[in-house]
Image (tube, rainbow, N blue to C red):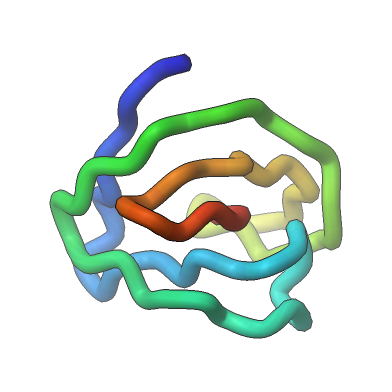
Length: 68
């Protein structure tokens, strides 16, 4: 497993399922470290660089596990 950091200035939502419609478990702040468990294909979302994407990361953030 690998480590990652949140690079979005506003933070990133840790969700219960890999879709933007899933409940938000937590808001992970800028520079927060998380453990990457695996990459999955999930719901489509708007990509920061434009267009859409459907790749999500299953991650552990402290005691919580979810998708970013």
